Amino acid sequence: MYNGLLHLHNVLRWVILLLLVITIVRSFAGMTGNKPFSSGDRKLGTFLMICAHITFLIGVYQWIAGDLGLKAIQSAGMGVIMKNANPRFWAIEHPVGMLLAIILITVGRRQSKAPVSDTIKHKRTFWYYLVALIIIIAVVPWPFREGIARPWFPGVS
Image (cartoon, rainbow, N blue to C red; front, side, top):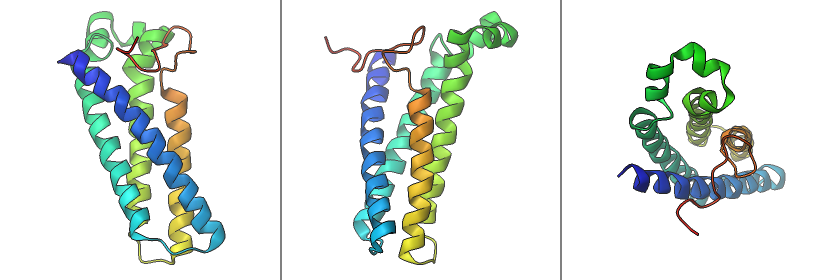
């Protein structure tokens, strides 16, 4: 079950990145082109938020049940974890960074429901989603990151 959820976690990462890029581009176009905030914009934000929350819940399960999160902290101690980059990334940096990104996505989605002009909605969602994207890119274990690298598509060879 753990491996299956790990693969689902990875697939949803790509869905989130794709939805983030689409929503950022649409928000930028709406902000600069003075376009209305459409139901399509709302739906994209909703799908993005749902995928982010599901991915986070799967990640919390992995953090609790897997060997790289809570178990690593319990067995080695927080002091040891914080002194070593690899275990620190998995036990602290990745989950905290993703939590911050998901909070920003959620707040961005909430801003799209605010009773303000459509241009302001586009501007707010643009900035919340852009910062979330930057954080996600920073804390994903990309294949080129030494010590924490994971394949682009685990399980696919």
